[in-house]
Length: 112
Image (cartoon, rainbow, N blue to C red; front, side, top):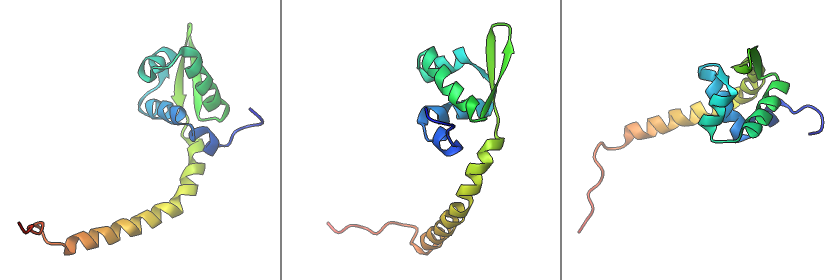
């Protein structure tokens, strides 16, 4: 890997997004992530290293286990980027809702 990856590049990878989703609910140890994701321990550890290097997770060492925690602060960059698009989606969803309100409640009957 050349240089540091941006937050966008890090979360572009589907497995890393799954790991973030799992950590959003509660901290996890590597073994639990391996079992849930169905990946090898080295593969999960590699993804966790990328997430840790990007500042998205931290590791708490306890005895021989590492418990990983989500750090949501770096995701603010993504949220700021998505915000203008969210307004765009909202406008389209509002238009769809208005259109659906004008439709009849019952579907038209087919001719036989």
